[in-house]
Structures are given as C-alpha cells and as structure tokens.
Image 1 (cartoon, one colour):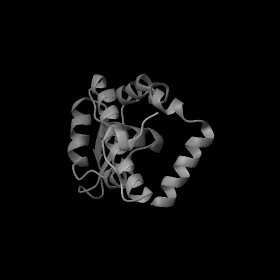
Image 2: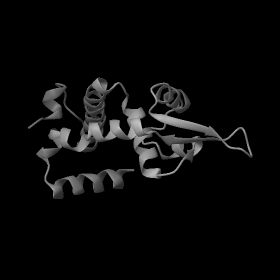
Image 3: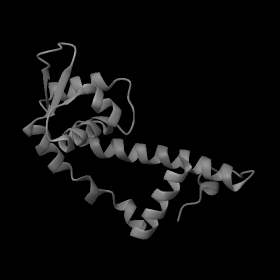
Length: 145
C-alpha cells in the first residue's frame, strides 16, 4: 500500500496538511493514468467527458449546457468540440431562430467509440477498494467540497 510520506519523501505538520497534499498528489496520478488510457483512442479525457455528456443527453444539446456539465470546466471546450467534430465523433447544428446558438449531438461513430472504451472494466486500481470503501471515499470528497 502507498504512503504519501514515503512517496514524496516528506513529513507533514498535521494530518490535514498530509491529506491535502495526498489529494493533490493522487489527482495528478489519476490524471496521468487517464491521459495514458485515452491516448490509443485518439481522444483526451476532456473529450471523453464531452462524448459521455452527449450520450447521456440522448438528443442534441446546446454547447453552453455541455460546458456546464463538464467535470473539468475547460475554457477551451469549443476547441475540444471542434476536434471531436473533425473526427466525426459529434454533429453540430445551428439553431434556426438564433444563429448564435449551436446544438451538439453524438454521432454513431462517437457512440461506437464509447462502447469500445468501456472505461469501468479498465480501471483496475479501483479494485483495491471495496464498494463500501468507494462509497465512503466519495462521501468524504463530497463533504470536503
């Protein structure tokens, strides 16, 4: 089992400081794992998030709504969607009544990619936690926010 004190060769003033550093360290570790996982699929974790949002929406939704629902609020969400559009993973359509509004929908190719990815069977490090521990961790993170 890992120990943040040993991993970064450091001592902490308090358990709260240790927990904060551990959260930051773990977030970076998870980000690296996630980026490496999505690389073979030719998309980024943020692009995966956009595709996931669109799959769940079932019908076309506004770009602004996608930005609001993103886990990691990316200021470059429009650029991310441009890349997904270029790869034919999403479809866009302008609103007939207001040309400033753009609706986005996941394409069949995007749906097929999400089916291929099936993230949950590939995050084996989460198997180190029981369902009860995972729930407790989630509740603690919710409490912290």
